[in-house]
Length: 124
Image (tube, rainbow, N blue to C red):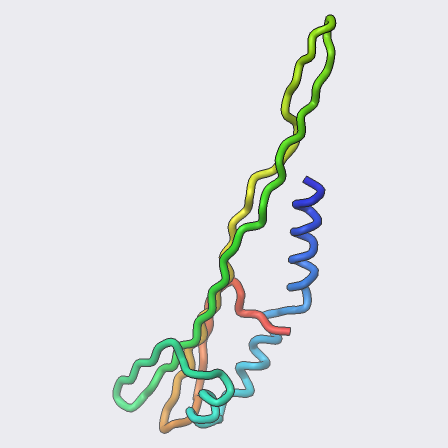
């Protein structure tokens, strides 16, 4: 259990400085940029859609993993000269998925707005 707690604390500590507010600040710098400037900064989008002269560029990232659990330990006691063993402690593995999807709206080849969703739309 202590090992699991240490791993969780480390993950929280590492991501502690990454915030949605910082991600929002980065997105704000894209407003007013050309589509070419956006693609130069963000790379080729994972998806695009166009309707009546308005383009939408989609950027997505996903990360999944497993935090390994810990094995229980054997606890043996002697009662009346006979050993009795039971398993104590341990913890299950924990799976996680972090994702963020950001969509930029482009009108007349200029970024005019954005939206994002997901549990990992954060930046340092």
